[in-house]
Length: 214
Ligand code: GAR
Image 1 (cartoon, helix red, strand yellow):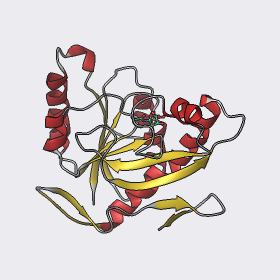
Image 2 (cartoon, helix red, strand yellow):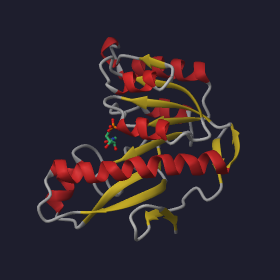
Image 3 (tube, rainbow, N blue to C red):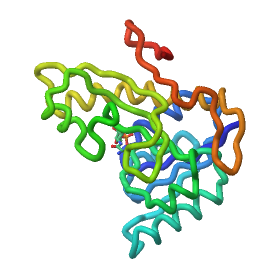
Image 4 (cartoon, rainbow, N blue to C red):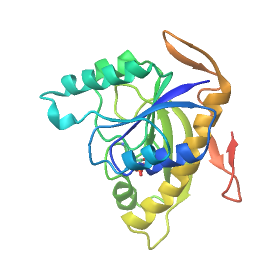
């Protein structure tokens, strides 16, 4: 069975959606970079092992990355799943786990990388916004796209209403991608996880309920 470690920074609603989906995955631990991350309690209540690697206790980004890598390596996961993990990871960390780190980003990448994606979308006047699940590479929010979900922008949207609409779809698409990986990984080796159809693009069907592959 594919094994994962989930990294969070805050409330952990994407992590919760993954846990609730009861995927055929071995979730070895949920690790937060902040001791007050609300998702830690949710994970513990669901029976997951939880850990904290508090980034404020480290004098440099590399020192934090190394401590985080040590905790991850202890669990020997096949994949590292970033779910609202808001620390930028250094090149050395990312290159240590080639093709093994996944992230969900609240925009249709390559549009609106970085922070405040819903504000960026409203300011740009786009009519379609969304979320992207991608493989993490050293360039921020630029790795190969595994799946995207489109979300309409309403005329009266503000950041909160648009963000809430996107988040509901994040909770659909991330578990769906992980299910695909859990069921389709063909091998796991030095160069990471080898997938069938790694660049598959997905969208919601007309009912808005079901993911379909393109
Ligand atoms: C989610 O919207 C996620 O896409 C975003 O942070 C939120 C975390 O919510 N992640 C990023 O912006 C990563 N750059 P959650 O803690 O409730 O899952």
